[in-house]
Image (cartoon, rainbow, N blue to C red):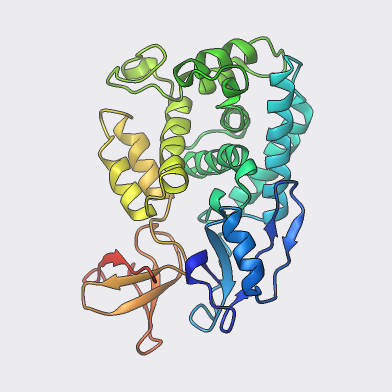
Length: 327
């Protein structure tokens, strides 16, 4: 299995590996079948840009790191419900938030790495909430490296799911953290820590963030984790920046946007090249990433020319020099 852009899809050689959902979260196309060209036109019209497919090139790639899709869809639905409640100035359904956080924690705990389901693989109406779920998954994964206890992880996760809740209350982008905090701190079942994750996620340690221009340790560790994950997820989804380039940009934020240990934890937690990605190596070989072991930036690859598998964890003379995109 691998992730491709819709423009790469070939109905003669590829089958859909994961379902496609419409804006009502109903299965539009089921997995295990090829997509008729007319259906593909409809998918393109919905601005769905990526598909998970099975083909001969990706044979044997299981993408075990991929989030369970039904749980992901459930989480999106629960986040949407909270936004609807906030828009109506009603209390949140915190019980359902805590239940989905438990499921997300299970998803992250049982995997060495997390491969995100792109927000651009679903209908546009669902993307804001899918973004919140993906940011939370990234934050939980990064937290593994920072030895954060499980109780605090739940506060971080709720803050991650609700980090943009202020957007339900204002159209002023620079005011949404303040509005979100004002709303969340009135919720007795939402911790002050979770509320501050929403409040601070656009701050920077150099004081160049908003809404308060916090500096250094004023910018809480959990809000930094959410902030770096929010920045990365926006780059790969909204701005369509390839993950390896987004990672390079994250590195430039060390010591200015975020504390160096937060940036390093992110680098050590999130793979730049996920299984199924075609890459070019410094020896000239074109390969496909087959799996990730312990070093997130040093995957195992399979040469397309010979089918030989090579672990970049073991052979440090080999480097990935770029990603190969089909046109």
